[in-house]
Structures are given as C-alpha cells and as structure tokens.
Length: 452
Image (cartoon, rainbow, N blue to C red; front, top):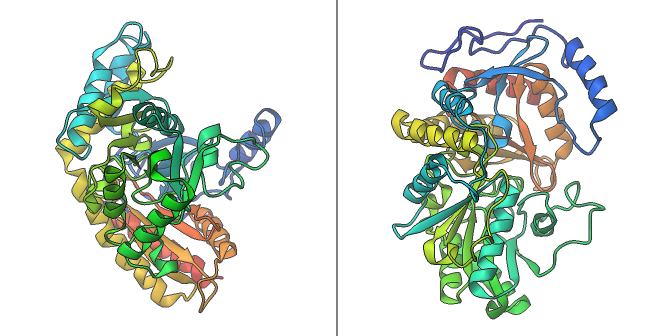
C-alpha cells in the first residue's frame, strides 16, 4: 500500500527524506513488530508508546520508521521539534559542540553556551526588567525549581494550580496535575501544600474572563489564603488538559491578584513557548508579564534542556549551591538551543505559526460543520485542537478520539490525543510543515471521521 503526496515547495528538504506521506507496509510493519517484541522483554509497561512504530530518521515535518513508512508528524514529539526535525543549523551547532566538549558541569567549570541561552531567554521572555535563568533537564524539573525558588523568595509554602493542569511526573508535579490516571495512580504519597482552583474553560463553563477569575480568586482566598501562598502556576494555554484557551481577561486578572498579594505568578510555557503560538511565549497573547517563565520542549530542537527564567531579585533568592544539577544546561544541548533561538530569529518562524493557524483552523472548522461529534475547535498558532463529544451534547467522546488517531496512523498521519477525559485531538506540527502537508493530513482525518 502506498499513499503519497508530491513534495511541497518551500519545505525543508532532505534528499533522502521527501516531504511527503508514504505508507508501504502494514502499520506497524514487520521490523517495528520485531523491535516491539525485543522492547517488551527489557522496557517496563509503564513506558507506554501510543503508536508502536519505531522511527529511524526524520527531517522537516516527516518521520520515517524502520520499515520505510513516511508519516506526517502533527505531534512533534509533543511540541519539541517546533523548528522541524534535524534542522541543519541546529544539527551543525550540536555536532560542533560534540567535537569540543561534552560535559564539565556548569556549577564546577562553566562555559559560554549556558550563558548564551540565559541571555536569549532574558531577551525573549515577556518583561523589560532584569532577568536571570537556571537551566535544567526537563519540563518537570523546571516546574520543581520554579516552585522551589518561589517558596524561597516568599517564605511561604502553598502552591496553587488550576483544574485540568498538567505539570509533570515527578513527585511534586504529580501532586500538581489535575488528572491522576495514568500519571499518579499508585505512586503516592504526594507532596503537600498544593491547592487546585477552578480554571477558565469557555466551551464548558460559559463564563467571561472576569467571572472565571472571580471564581478562581475566591476559591484561593477561601481555601488557602493569599498570605500562605508562594506561587500560582498556570499554563497560558493548557497542554495535556486539552489546549484550553482561557476567556479574555482571565489570566491578567489572576496576575493582578498575585502581584497585589505578593504571590509569585509562574507561567508554565513548557508546551506553549518557543514560537509555538506565533509569539515567543504564549503569555504575550494575553498581555501577561510573569514573574517566572518555565521553558522546555522546543527550546533545544529535541535535545534535553529546560529553564526557569524570572525577575533577577526572585531568582537570586536561592543561596549559592541551591540550584543546579549534574546535566542541567549540558554544553551540547545549550549549543543546540542557541541555534534554535537564532533559527527562529532569522527565518521568520513566528509568522509561520500564524500561517499554520490560517490554513489548519478553517479546515478543522470545516470538519466540525461536517461531523457532529466535533464540539469545539480551539487553540492559537500551531497549537490547535478539536474536542470530540457525543452528538448534540458536551459529553466527552474518547472512543471516537482513539478510533480517529488509530485510523490516521494507518494512513501515515501522527496525531496526538489529550484532554482530561481523553476526548481531544491536538495538533502540534513543526513550523516547517507546508500547507500541502497540512491539507493532506486533514483529508486523512476527514476520511477517518466519515468511516466512524
């Protein structure tokens, strides 16, 4: 079976990886099946793979499995390969650094690339005040450090999060997540002093931003009390929760309340940052200037890196030796990150996110008008989603999501699921993806909906 589309002009090209969809075996193919059997003997079941096809190569917006099947990647490693797979300048920067030094540990003998990443984050995160950055390995580690710094700065213990939030799989972040299964089931006891407040979810609550903010603030004041609250951690656009975009005015009202009460406002931009929404950080769409910004995923093009960037006076609250880690800000990952920043700066990728939205959103709206199980289309830039419901209701329809994602994979389109109730399809394509590939992928989805 082969299902192809002609290469798109203007798309990042690799002579060995055409930017077109092509399925040549069953999914998964025989080599993937063989690898999967080997995997089951040595990798625990807790490390689950949504699609057991084993990827061998990737470039631009296409990934190629060990059987030679080419997939349109609408997931980007959950928003990691924002600039595209194996971008030449990023690969070259990492390769050059590999030939110089792998590791020294920044807290022992520092190096320039760490400093350059911190300078880039100070330049591109919201706010024109003095900022400082600590680099770590993962998004969850960034969340842990952001909370740690906020507690040290305020002398308070309480941590507030929102309904439908997702922040990681470490002990503290499991306590901060809204959804327990599968991320926290059976892994307790969990960290204390974490308080979850209602959020703004326009599709379901119908509240204005002002009304939703009053509800959130009222809950925090009654349940925690501002004087005991170190920080409020919010995703400007919620990720695992289903790409929930809050109502206008909601987030600025929360930030205003935090500032008035000495609460550190932390923006978890791990999934929504680094040009994903057409701004460097999604906070900009809402007029937010967070005290701390958490970044990861797309920051280094696929290498492990994350950061906490914030007001210098808050970041300097931690004593010498209180922040850091063995691999945090690794020279190779940091060099790749600098290249990612420069690639975004010089190639106009912020505009590409807007282009993707202008192409993909109308197509998703067209699907909604055609298929009554699509209840909502939402998102910003190249961070879009559709919520599937039982026809005529707002009741979740996770079975349809699973069927659609599985059918799309069989035809060579990788699409991710999300949502507290598992009823959201989310789209996180590389900013290098062409309009032709987007339209081809939507055509596959349309056929999958029609086949339900």
